Length: 77
Image (cartoon, rainbow, N blue to C red; front, side, top):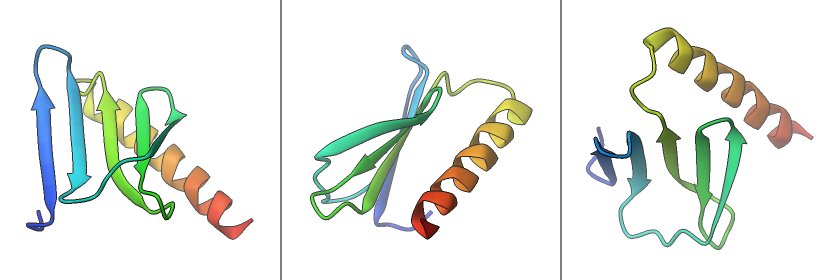
C-alpha cells in the first residue's frame, strides 16, 4: 500500500477505513449499503469506509464491483 494511505480496522465496530494522509474529509456519502465514500473540499475521493468489514469475500467483491460500476456511470454523466 502506498505510504500516502492509512488503513485502519476497528475490530469492535467491524469497520475498515482507508484514507489519504493529510486530507480533510468534508463530506461523505453511503454509495452502497455499508460502503461510505469520503470527499475533500474539492470533491476528490480521499477515503473509503467499509461497515461490517468481516463479511465474506464474495459479498465484498460484489459490493465493490457494483459500487465501482455506479461511480464510473456517475463520472461519465
